[in-house]
Image 1: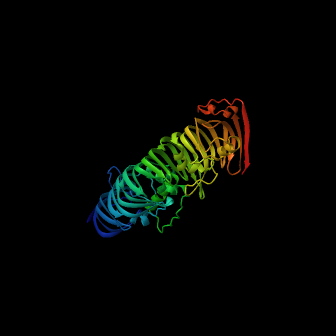
Image 2 (image 1 turned 135 degrees about the vertical axis):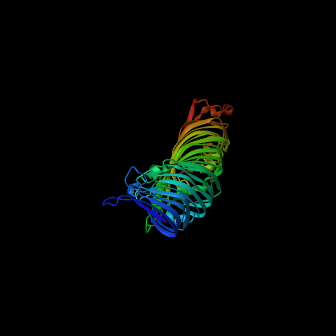
Image 3 (image 1 turned 90 degrees about the horizontal axis):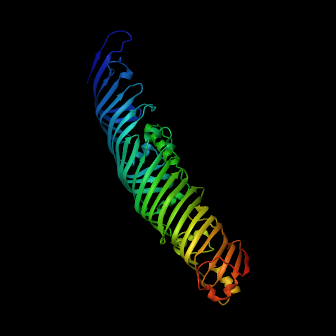
Length: 489
């Protein structure tokens, strides 16, 4: 411990001062908060650059072999330098091993809670140390998590068995091989947030989190909370706000109002009755919306591609989707999607391979169940090797016009048409049905709730069963009998 003073002994002249000090088990107040049990050695010099006069802007503190406790977390540092006391600038290394739960009270996040686990911090920091961040901050190093449990509060998601490395690279955050379990889904994630430090204190809502996620089996039931309204967790007003709490508030804004882009690969995927394989998808989480882009998967013997969106509402959600199906087994997909929210044609009524272009908009509950008769849109479809089984309208036709033919199990050729769906009503454009029992041309509205009004043209050639030996559509009606099937709901 000592001091050196040199210079002129004259009015308004600041002498050059160099001090050496050693501190043990002391308390220190800093812009980051009060440090306890501090031990270190160090020096102070008020003329670091001899080209300039001694003074606060030309001063520097150097601390060596630092050990201290901040909010019950012990930190170690080999060296810390604070220069320019008018606008303090800090360069330091920082190391700590701690329980993750200790961060909860310290950061007071309304997005993330740690329920268990260990953290290991090893970083270097350069940047502002004052109350206001006036200089660009840079962080390099790692935060390693092990055996962690993380509760994402807005969605009520609990991630268990979490481990991985958060690497700070200048202004960016890179997450390497982060492993987590949500419900029965095991996830391996890699992610990054570019310009994190540059935007965090200014415009955190402009930040984008990029994630690459893979899993052998994705169970969407584990993430059902994303079709519920996002929970708002009230923030407790801290008695004394520190820089970490300010950073946490901005991180919460980033998670709430920023964009998360997820590129997902799953070997298998399940959701209620739906099963798929070889799943790839891009998912954007923006505010209260989930955007689905370039979803591709195999299902029911065929392939499916999909784009869509889900907007959270109060106990209900607006769902929009555009999908293309290629040679999908009809009973399989109708069963998986609960007959698309209608009961006119169900999984029990049809067999065959379905190719289709689908555009639908509807409402689903916060349990991911379709509100009855809420779906609207259109379906352009083609069915090959089709069978119609116990279809009530066909059986009614048989009972009036073809009493000697069995309409309970109909085999037909390619069936192509466009359907317009409006709740319980399905509008059928003119469609040729060439089957083993009858040839029909059908159009109109089929509605089990409000009433059906169908026009049916029956070619007179149906009087000869030999005409039904070929199932290839011709488009020719010829001489026919026109029937109207109408009833009130």
